[in-house]
Length: 91
Image 1 (spheres, one colour):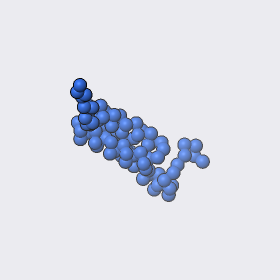
Image 2: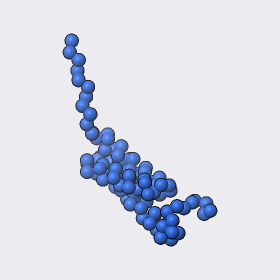
Image 3: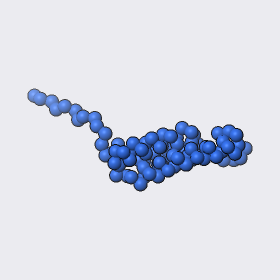
Image 4: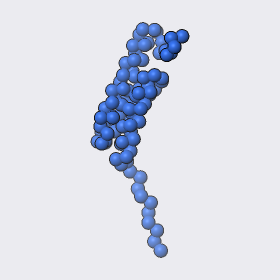
């Protein structure tokens, strides 16, 4: 009796789709919280997904744009208030 080998682990189309969606979501959430962390992560995931030719190219581009926007918002807030933190309630 011969057992078949488990399928090899390789990055496929679903992985790049997940990266594109994750970059979009992280970039969007990063506009509100943790933009110093989530912005660069969104950028990296978007670039990887685009280099691997994701079918969700538009979502990856949105994630890339939002990741960059996260860092721009952080820079503007730091320049305006002298700190990297801000609150929705203005307190």
